[in-house]
Image (tube, rainbow, N blue to C red):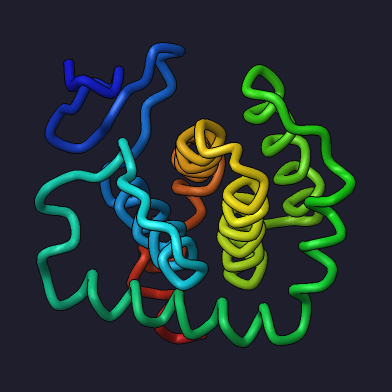
Length: 170
């Protein structure tokens, strides 16, 4: 077990509550949140980071496509996400259920790439919101909660629709 409470296998990482997280998903979530926090002046090291997940050409293209789509999305909807973050109650014990509730609302009419991008944007805005309030301990919970939700609820759809690489076609 790593010092961060996570257990790594070849394709999944598991936390204490036994939710399995796909390593590629963990990489994309960690990279995305880390990039957003870095842009706001905070260096964060994700407990979900895995050594080899980001070391290939395809992963780099997916990561760049996700960032580009998110920038376009933020240009239109960032104020809404900031407003949502301002309305939510934040505590370590309620963060994961809060994120799951937002995700369930977001995906209630089906899964689409645009909604997946919106979920990444929401998570990263939430992380910045917590950083701005010095709630640094919640950032790891946000990353874990996003990665767990995607792995458990969205990954089958992602895999059925061309895998992560398909986001490059959006």
